[in-house]
Image (cartoon, helix red, strand yellow):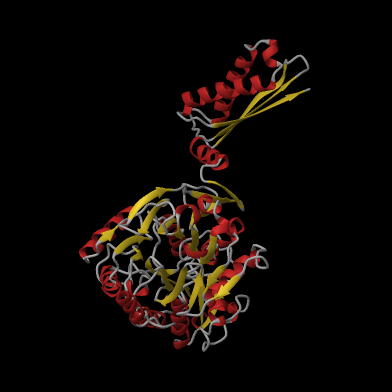
Length: 557
């Protein structure tokens, strides 16, 4: 049995969470498996990770088997599917496979990371087929909120897996072909062993809706507005960009792209023949010369990102774009869970400048999801007819609900793995057979660090508890020459007990503690530092019920 070929699926990111997709398929006996990686994405930091903007999946398990990776296959170019490539590719060093639009954006990322000359990228045409060892992979054309989204039909000697990636069923996607229903039905006729499927909207009844509907809504809204108009959407949603641009042109407005991601995505789209028949964009340093009712600014920053274009507009710090009374801002995007606070703050700042806001909440036609709702999921199961359902791309509640839906669709087996749980798909009945290391890595100031690294732990601790700094000067006989001097950071004071008085009281306690040390103890810097830290933490807890970080400095003269 140890020499028997097996087909296994192992998620290391994207299961029990939305984003940071990182999936592995292995084939062969356990001691000699060959692997393919499907997607290598990021997620983003939040209030719980101060100073951390990017979070990566931990590749420790597959890094140990890097020589057995046959390729990294990328389903589409969203950050949660390709964003980790420039950070983690040096650890895996496997060839990359992507369609032309995804390959274009991937090259830009690798060029910025100075890896373009090292990483090999093979472009695969839409609906193309290629082989990686025992895996024959055919791209299945789907629709999503970015050009060239693909499912993967992964054929192996033990059966075929349909890995959907991100998708929806859009009958009128505006840019690119419709979902290739015939190809999925043919797979179902051939026999699909397992379907690994998007779970994002499993709780949402009905269908996600079409981009064509959004185009109509944008056209009507832009036509009703006076003054300058800014529109914010996901830069990767080229169909939405196209709709905003055409709504502007139809209403006599030229378009200015504002934000590096917007400019990069437009260039990528044009490289594959999209956005080909629109008017030239107006450079942002020239747009101010246009009459207010003749210009539309298409901006990055719909999620409240602090360095994006719209945030700088809201702060009044953008060098070329200012919005005020009589102007409008359209948010043609959804609120990603976790971004509620920064988006609310951004919108409040814009409103405070007199800008009129239009969002999907008060104008539902301004956005449709790129992920399948329940009716679309049911249709996919009817087409593919898999023997095994493996939900992915969802939080725990999404995956478990997706299991229930699959069983309602008469799928014989359904499993909802957590990151790190290896499922044997064949031979025999599907089951979790192993648990491998999984976790997260943080990009902190451009450095990849462990999830629970010391720097972030200290930052969190300081953010909640504050900081005390204490310095003391001792002479050659370890007598106090100056200090202790205490500075208080991030802790409260009031009129009854101002911070200056608290700092003086802490300094007195520190001095008293040092005076009680023996001469030998005062000769040892480590003992002095430990004493000061212990005394100040105890006193701080008595005053504030906090345990601050204490930084000590001992100088000798």
